Structures are given as C-alpha cells and as structure tokens.
Length: 289
Image (cartoon, helix red, strand yellow):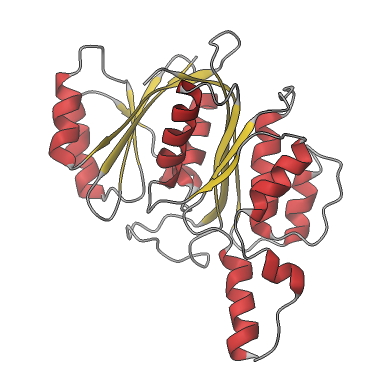
C-alpha cells in the first residue's frame, strides 16, 4: 500500500468505570463545548480525537473513521436491563445512544467536518479493517484527509483478567490518527497494512521481504504469550513494545498502542501483529519520524 502519513497521533487511556464527569473535565482541555446527554463511549471518542487534532486545522471534508470492537456496551446493557429486568421503557437519549455510530456523529458535529462518517467493527481487527477502508478511499482520491481511531470501554471490571488471561489492567481506550497524503509535516506513517490467512503465510512474507525489518515489535491482545515468544524468535533482534502490560488493555488497545509508539519512539519502525478468532493475521508496519 502507499504510505498513509500521520500528521497527528494521540491516545487517551482512562480508568475503568470512571465517572462521566471526570471524562467531561478531561474533554474541556480540548473543547469548550458543553456536552449534555452523552455517555462514556461518546466522551471517550471526543477526548481521543480532539487530543489528536489539537493544534491542527482540519479541512471541512475530513473523513471520520471510528473503529470499535463492541461499541457502547455501557448504555446498551443499561437499556436492556430497563426493558427486560425492570420491565420499563428506557430513557430516550439512552436508547438513541445505544447506537455506537452516534459517537462519530457527535465528533463530526464538534469538529465541523462534512466528509465521510463511518463506524467499523470487525472481530478483534476493527482498527486494521478501518485503516484498510481509509487507505482505499485515499487511493481512489475520495478523501484528502481523514481522522481514524479506535474506541472501546474497559472489557471487564477492574482487577479482572482479559481474554488472553495475562491479567492486564482493563482501561477505557481511545486512540486516534490524523492522516494526510503528503509527507511534509508528518510525524509518522503507516507503511504496511497486510492481511494473511494464517501464521505461516505471514511469516513467509516477513522472511521474503527485501527491505530492512522493523526494530520494534508489538503484539495485540489475541496473541498469547507463548505465541508472542515464537514470533519474537522468528523476527530476530527487535525491541518489544509491551503496551498492554505497560498501559492496560481494551478492545481498541491496538490503536492506542500504535499512537503511543508514534509519540514515544521517534526514528523507530514498528511491526504490530494481531489475529482474529478464525486465525487470520493482520500486520501493520508503522514508522515514527
């Protein structure tokens, strides 16, 4: 793929089950608008995206690509409880906000953009698939700039274990990138975004590449510890960026981890590996300038 140049990158990681008023205080650092009748999911999307574009001027036709694994679980669970447990009608705004793409609407409204507005979910590879879509739109000249991010609420109560069973701290996560086609002024780039049917195909591509391998490697939450060790051996001498162990996990942790890499590892190149439940692999290579 042609490089997607990163002109802004930011991640917000919040405590699991944090009060919405605390999130509103965080958002006031980047926006003076007073948001009413919004939930934690919408606030997380706004905080991460506004932090990403802080200090940048957005073109009016900037596209918004919000990726999420499970969307607005909080309000959805509350509404279902009201309907099936309490046997009452849910509050109107709570019902409306169960639609996770409402967050992308709020974001476009707040930023004043009129470009494409898309919400993407794909089992454990939501950010990678959203990036595929943005790259296709750039290649077709359908977008001149794009704001893409991953947003998810903490996957389980604080102190619990995530699906990989490694005891990572659950967090609310919102990781975002401002993408433009030109390199000038960029702080990084998505150099590769590839999908493979299995680990063998992914490894064959890595071994057959002609350019120098990345000097940093990171793994998504679906890559178990023993598999990560095998990949490290196959990839050769590379530093490991364990963003999950360092910062915590949510279902959009890949977007958050890569945003942190772009800001914290200037001059380095990252290979990020992840997989879905069917055994399909996704490989991202990211340069930090």
